[in-house]
Image (cartoon, rainbow, N blue to C red; front, side, top):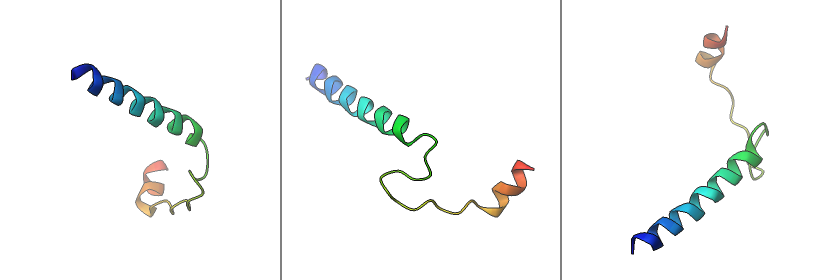
Length: 46
């Protein structure tokens, strides 16, 4: 039972990593809109 759970978790981890790598540096993932950057975050960057 533990090996089945571990195998499923490994597949999910690989899928998550793959989507994260593809989305890195992109304006949006899967065609969704890019949310506006909060004003407080802009002030923190300065």
